[in-house]
Image (tube, rainbow, N blue to C red; front, top):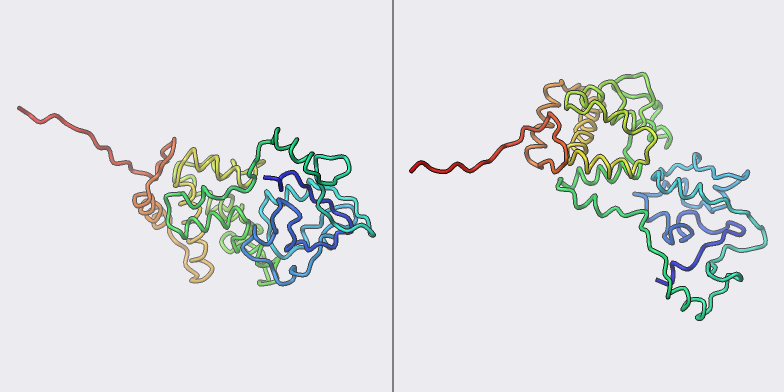
Length: 273
């Protein structure tokens, strides 16, 4: 608990951006699927320069929650002062048992900003759980991400060939995807992603509509991959069949019931005497 009373103060920014615990009291490398080899040697002062965080230059994709928290920090670099941990609850920044005892008597509520446990508790197969985890970490290998990593030559959507294939475009706003959401009776979903944090969106709409939200995203991604790797475009009926099969197998615990679900009603009838 005492570690919550310490704050990391950036001085010269010579700490490792990925492998020193300078934010969330965790190593950033532990919060992403992998660190791109081009980024492994970066220090904090390699990313903070010209008075701002230059996260767009990273080859490694960071989750939105982490980007937001990093950007909330506005350090003042001091060349001759090393990065240090300070005791937040004293004016000098120096830890003492007296200050610690006083702080422990009135502890602040601990807020876990990165609680991913709910993902692994979804009543879904592991591959869909991992897909949701990838979405939240912005690591789904769309054309935009692969192009950013210099893996492919184009960042255009392979289905519509018009827009950049971001994760949002792929799973929500591509005309092919919009048609899927509409066919499932969830035409409002593509517009719901605007102005809301990625993590909060998944929690909110997962609670409202249940597993079907994640199943639709997964099936859309599978259909997209069929286009990319097999040059085969699944028909609307085929996609609907895949969705119905998944929904029937994995259930749909929710407060609303999309049209793609065909619920089985069970009732007891008193036998005739």
